[in-house]
Image (cartoon, rainbow, N blue to C red; front, side):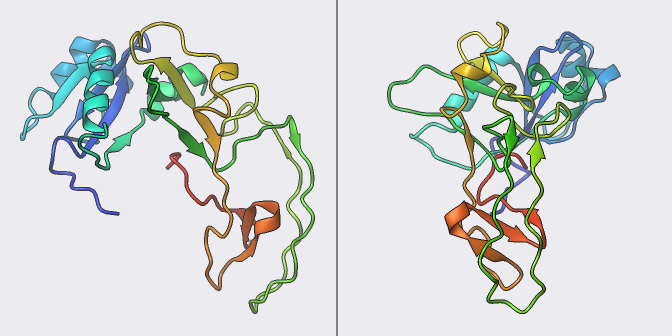
Length: 222
């Protein structure tokens, strides 16, 4: 997949001001630091001199714009960068994470795929898969994974990296994890995700092992 970074409707970045409110910038993935993003006006000022010009918009306009850009009438791939500095500034909590602006629609379902979504408090040990047909040493089974408040993935009790909000009112409180888990926040099932000689696949367990690491099939967390 290739993205044309020179087109305003092909790439962009989210930015958060000092109060945590979301702004969307289209046409670049460059970001201001926290000091340069203290308010929406400061964010707009940072991008004002860009040539070619970029579009800066608040969250409510961003929701409508993304709905238009990613709608079924004109499907496309849009590369959006999250604002890590804003997430880090609030202690790596969900309300500073990657924005997912959810609209009310009877015909569309918005989904975020995470390759390590933890649906249990503790993932049990996974039995070692069948011997690999490929000529490299077998790996031991992965160790149990305990939910860690500093993990970079969604857990069963905390969206953690995703800030789910209603597109109609993005400045309101984020949606609780109970309203989004398994509906909008979905685990990527990596069955046969990397069918190469460097990876052994274990479809019965729904994961693939590449030298001991988990490899998601598809994920929006990139």
